Image 1 (cartoon, rainbow over the protein chains, first blue to last red):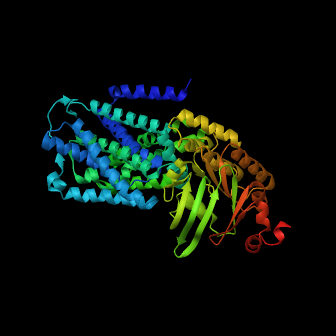
Image 2 (image 1 turned 135 degrees about the vertical axis):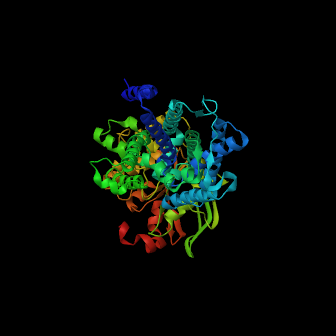
Image 3 (image 1 turned 60 degrees about the vertical axis):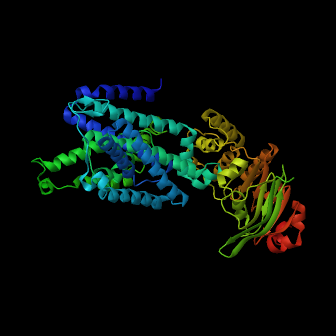
Length: 336
Length: 240
């Protein structure tokens, strides 16, 4: 009996029936957890497996959100179709950034900074582009009622939950399949040692670009989800500075380059972040020192910083690495 | 016809002539030793053959085809594999996965890559491959791994960069036996080596590089008696 498989099926069944038992608040929280797990996985496919550290994934997220929303508002394009088009645009942009960076042999921090720079370029460009309302953003027109066809649900959030769950599960399956295929082996070879990989026949440029393409396409789909879920986007929300960090937090905490790292990370981080926000909004009586922070923005971001420092010092391989050490090789199904 | 021909190969590093009109041939089925003092250009020559450097002049022909200036992965796909002087294992991957990455250059099937990697590991004698990470291996075993990985790409020509340096006499003897076994399997071998006893015993022919130039070539016996080689490299006492 394969216990890993049993666990996965059990987990999936629980996830499928879960919305029946959740209050509206917990349902929103669950959707956010799935959302960050999904985005984390998209980032992980590239950075975790090929080792090319992206610090600019907000770029692809924002392209996805803006493409589908703009097409919907101005051309009446169905958001599902807009989602795919946004994915393709983001992929093209990712390949463009990747080609420039990889071709000129940028590695490590230089690559990360390049991706960040491009994300910032999009933030400032979108803030000044009249065709997308500059910093005022775009409102998704409400059609009223619940419609799978129009990717919009007014009376219930449960369908959003299932859409995000579907996307998250697909992202794990994609990662799993990549990890077991030649592609995944080549990704990991590039991560471990580029010279050795090249000497063994790995076309570095081609495989790095492949990772970039898959990752940027999938990240953009998350952007469209965001727009359809919150009905509103603006440059700061979808291209924002901190989004670049937020996307990579879950996999970094959970375990970079592992199959379930992003999920585990999101499961811990998202409630923590929501809790911090709630605490700061209305500090409970037994935590009087928080009153000083009441209503101030950015505490959750400080918390992120703190978590990152702690993780890097104490859990360099993330939660998955930690669990694996506890089980001493008893948990190999956690990785690919 | 020679399997590999190096013609007038020249490489500069900022005005320093690292390789100066190097001409040499590797014949099919032989073990050719490449020796010379530190800085003679041995590894530079390897890097120029395998695409890690682009030569400033001259040509590299493999089976008559001009492969000068190809990318490393293209050189590998043509049938030339190499090891590195400072071994470069995929440290966080298992021994088996390391070798499978080599196998994937000839197949896209995971099953085939797995089987081929197992054969290479049997051949080179590396046990415990599923669980052990490459970073946990001892130095001699890392060199074996590097060899297994290179062989997994099914090369016709194998370039070994100091695989015996740093090994004790027993390990070195085992390595020599392994290299001969590889050759007997039909792979031509070009080997850089510092351990003179080893390279003399293993090579069919030897080429001597000195300051980027070929100063002698011939059988081990001829080389050990060559006046110029003795003057510039071997020294009189070393082969007493």
